[in-house]
Amino acid sequence: MAKNTGFPTTPDFARQQENIRKAKGNPNKNIHHKKKNSNYGGGDYVAQKASVRMEQQNKKKESIFDMTPAVRIAFFVLLAIMLALVVMGMGSYKGNALVSYLSSLFTGATCALLAGNGYSNKKKGKPATTFQTVLLVVLAGLGLLYLATGVMGLAALLKA
Image (cartoon, rainbow, N blue to C red; front, side):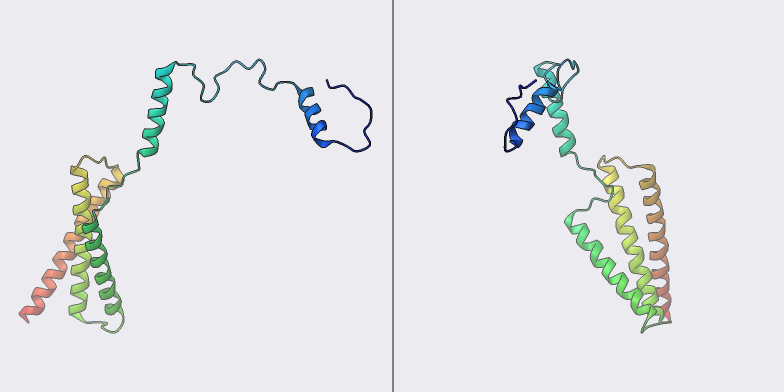
C-alpha cells in the first residue's frame, strides 16, 4: 500500500486515485483463460479467425426478391399505375368497368413480375426459405388470376 505522508492541506485527487489503484493490485493477476485477440492458436489460427470475421462482415443477407435496376423501375411503374387505377376506380370512376378491368390487369402484372423475379433469383442458386417459396407460389397464382380476369374483362368490353 502507499505510505501516508501526512495530511495535505489541499486534497490531490490524482494522487488519491493512484493510491487506490495501487492498493487494489493487478486485476488481471492469476487469470489463465484466453483473452480477446490473443494468439493461443498460432499464426494460422489468427489468420483464419480474421478471414471468418471479414467473410461475415462482407456477407449481406440476400433476399429472394433482389431486383436489378430495370426490374425495380418496371415494378414501381406498374405499382404506380395500379394504385392510380384503384384510387380512380374507388373515387371518380366508381362502377366503371374499364377502370376495374385495367386495375385488375395491372395488379396481375405486378404480381407476375414479382413472382417471375423471385423464380429467376431462385434459379441463380440463391437459397429460398419455405415461406419465400410459398410466397412465390401465391404471387404466381394471384398474378395469373388477376391477369386472366383483366384480359377476359377487356375482351368482353371490346366485343360489346
